[in-house]
Image 1 (cartoon, rainbow, N blue to C red):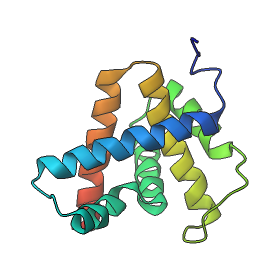
Image 2 (spheres, helix red, strand yellow; image 1 turned 180 degrees about the vertical axis):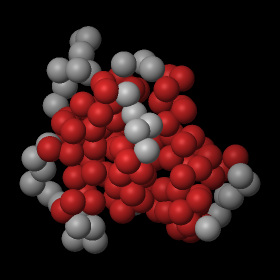
Image 3 (cartoon, one colour; image 1 turned 180 degrees about the horizontal axis):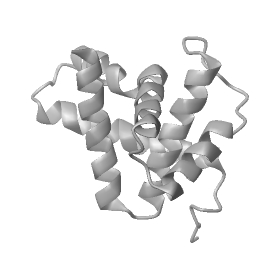
Image 4 (cartoon, helix red, strand yellow; image 1 turned 90 degrees about the vertical axis):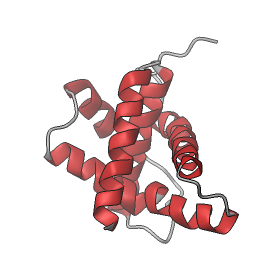
Length: 132
């Protein structure tokens, strides 16, 4: 089945984007030499939390680091209606985290590998700056 990511539901984009970014973060942490499961989990949460992803996407929007096409994907992701919002994050942060994940999923499914890796690396670097 060939799915056009431009026509796909934003929550489906976020679903795949969440998995892609989580795998990227886990690989990043392994490459840093972290191998203890609890340590890996604790470090990964810094990158994949809704609050962190929301902060990163806000920064990218504010700094005009996204293309018009990416901004449209982010808007769609932010406005997607989800019925299950975690208790540990605000509704606003959750919606922007969903937008972040939708953007990752969009680039993954569009096979925009270079831009996807660029954004994921930026997200890692931006998160590191925020946590230092």
